[in-house]
Length: 287
Length: 235
Image (tube, rainbow over all chains, first blue to last red; front, side, top):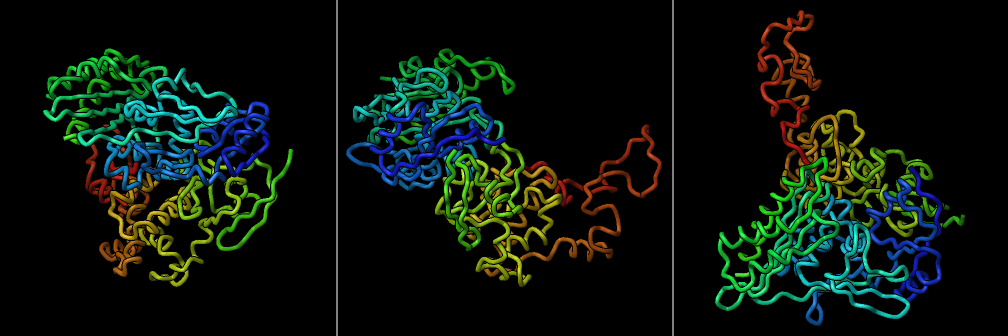
């Protein structure tokens, strides 16, 4: 099917993009387009104006700078997948990138776009939550930084205003004794997560867990943290029993729905299992 | 609605097009440029039949608008035989990946083949000597619904042999023919490429009560059957 007619705007700077977003009537932002283009083809989305960010070269970056890993709005999934920096220091990002969609889509789709799409089955929001990430948005009143915790509202809905665009997503650079991991259950390549779990731990000098983050994909109305699992872990020494307890807490806090891929009970059980696995990897990497 | 002027370099030739913003890249390639080797399989971005090689990467041309490709260099399956590496295998004209698909029976109906070839091209540019596992990963965004993936992997591996100055395997049809003492395509028996595993001997009356052996008549095992994916799947 063909998309409905639309006007195509190609700003070359963020400022230009913001003023277009402000002046146009109900504009839609196009970055990687791997969700938006099919939605437009099926006419699930019928924007009259599209602001295409792909000519804004300043947004093509993935780097560590001033204490943060910074991911520009045009960094593709494949850029994350192929980054030596990511492979070396960001376990959960390195785990997640090759599990997103398929190779062609990863060449085109963007991490920031995936977060902006705010699909509860999207993977990156979960990873960003586990890393205490921040969403940097530019709008008519300048720049605004939103903690990932406060960003997601409902499926496909977030705190971005219509005239705002995300220019960057950033997460603090990891501590010396920090490790993270992402585990995803899906039937085959290209599928969305049936369940996904991101885990991150920071260990004390004596090996106890100082900070723990557990975040879940596809088992709630948004990507969501599991504070119960985190509370089980913090201040404790990692052990198989402790991780099992955290897995059970995460499963209890999850709210999966039954669908054609599995029952809610099955998914809850998978949250329990994947939480333990992701935590085990994270602890291993932190040591 | 306003149309846009765009320039695409397709298979080495600069082409100027006037398109509506909503025109997909795949439609511009197929309909405006009349290069129908790039296929549309699924309309949903799943099947990969529309894969083209754009600015050094495999992308699905049904998942972007033509205006987004303005200024890009695109290679489609029609351009493969004009690339520098074409003719470096046994065939003087074909690209080694194309030759691989022909020699290793990498296709049956051929619908997915252009996309598979372009995904293979992107892989070999980045990694000229991939493992089977790496090939399977990189064609995981491309669906084949008839041959399975075994021979597609072999076809790309054949091209990798050419890229690395190794002798590629003998063509499968001739190798089988030599073993059978028959003609290519298993003319000596039922072990050919048809994929049927019915009872031996044409014209036999099918007795539904009879417990037919599952081996012997047809391929001995899925792994021996060139048309089976042997339970393995690139997915």
